[in-house]
Length: 112
Length: 110
Length: 214
Image 1: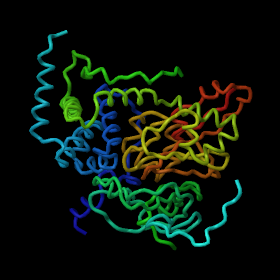
Image 2: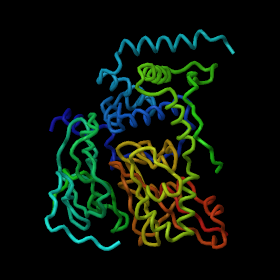
Image 3: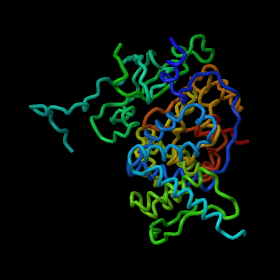
Image 4: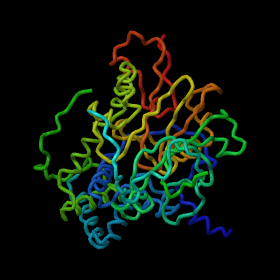
C-alpha cells in the first residue's frame, strides 16, 4: 500500500484508538468572536446554508497542516468562507473587500 | 383507545421505511474506504456487534457532508461492540463495550 | 437558575456586534465578522438571528443537565421517560432543542458505568449541557477514551471496579448522549435543588462519579 493512499483513506480527524498523550484538562472561556462563530454555525445549519455535516467535511478537507495550526473556531471561519465560495453564495473578492473594510474600521477608531 | 385491527390489505411501505435490522441482531460493520467524508471510524470497520436500538431514520450523513439535505432515508442503528473485539489484548473489563450509531448501508447481518 | 423572558424582539437592533475596542481583531475574527455581515447584507440570515442564538447558547449550561439528573433521581416516572426518550423528557422539562439532534440518556448503575466521547469531531449534548471543554475536543481524550477508558478515567481520578462494565458511547450521527450519574450515598434528605448542586458537567460526561456526602 503506498504511503499516499492513507492520506485519502484515513481522514485527519479519524483518531479513535491512535496512540496519544495523557489528557490535559484545559479549557478556556470563549472569546466573543468564537461565540459568534458558534452562533453563526448554528444559524447556517438552521437555514441549511451550510449544514453541520458540511462543516465537518469542510474541516476534514483543510488537511493536517491547517487543522494542526488553526484553532477550533479559526478552522470553522475558514471553512465557512470556502464552502460559501463553492456554493456561489459569496465570491472571494467580495470577502476580501469586506475584510479590508472591517480591518480598516477598527484602525479608524480613536485610541481608547 | 381500542387496539386497531391489523389492515386486511397491508400498505406498501416507501423505500427505507422498514428497518433492515432489528434489536438483538448480530451485525458486522463493513470494510470500505469512502473518500472525502465518512462517519464510520476506521477502528470499528470489520468488527461485529449487536443492535441495541434503532434511534432514527435519516439521510446518509456521508451525502449530507456534501450538501444533501433531503432524500431517501434509512435507519441508523445503535450497536454495542465488545472492546475485546476492537482491541487485541484489551486489558480492561471483559465485558467493556463501545456503543455507536451506524448507518444502514454499512451493516451486514451475521 | 434565573429565567429570562426571551420573547422581546431583538430585530430592531442593527448595530454591529463588536469585540472590545482596544484589542485589534485577529485575522479570523475579521473573517467571522465579514462573513456574518455579508450574509446579512444578502438577506440570507436576518439581522437578529446571531444575537438571538448567542442568547440561546448563553442559556445552555451544565446547570440544566444537573436539574434533569436531580429530577430523575427523585421522580421514578420522569427517570423512566428520560431513559425512554431523552429529548422528549428534556423538552417536557422546558429544555428545548434548537437543532435536530436526538438525546440518549445513559444510566449508570452498580453494574454499568457510561462515558461519552466524539472521536471524529466534538459532538456533545449542547442543548442541555452548553459548550464542551477544550480537553473533550482535543486528541488525547478522543483517541484514548475508546481504547483505554479505564486508564482515561484514572487520569480524572476515577476508579471503576473490574466487575463493573464500562460503556463508551462515540457520537457518529445525530444522536447525542448524557450520562445519568448514580445518586451518591448520604443524600436521602436532600432537596431537589441540593441534589442538582452536586451534579457536575464531568459527571454527566461520565469521566467522574459523584462522591458520597459525609
